[in-house]
Length: 169
Image (cartoon, rainbow, N blue to C red; front, side, top):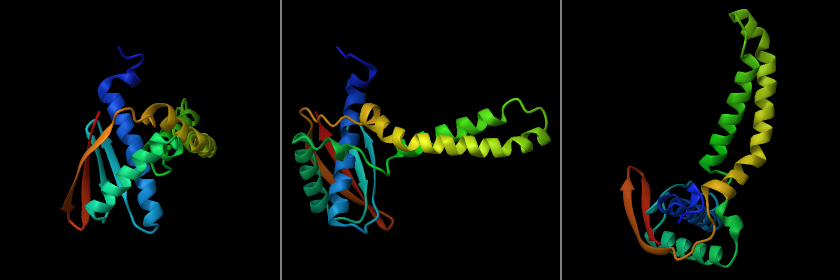
């Protein structure tokens, strides 16, 4: 029985794959520091977008999995994660909206714009430490459990290779 919604099988699988995706991106970035790359996770694995060989991606996944199991939990957090972007957008937009609320006219809204910008800056500042905390507590799980790499399938998408990393628990 799941203790929380985060422990439901499809959510837990996604969170673990998300952590492994981040760790894999960290490993690849260390080896290829100037290479553009991205990732996307789901319950059955994740995608790594970038011009790497399948062997490089497989090696990075294995190294990332080993390092996460050895306790390198910080690999599960990534500065470029969409969680950080969503947190920033939500906080800045919400706080700016609060500043504009209640204005009855266009002139009233225009006069409140400096406050909206100030509130948005506060939201931005708050989001910087909050995004990684949300990753750590909600969108990733660095405990790999019995998660295993099944296969890495590369496919060319235009000029970029998409590597489908399939896992199972």
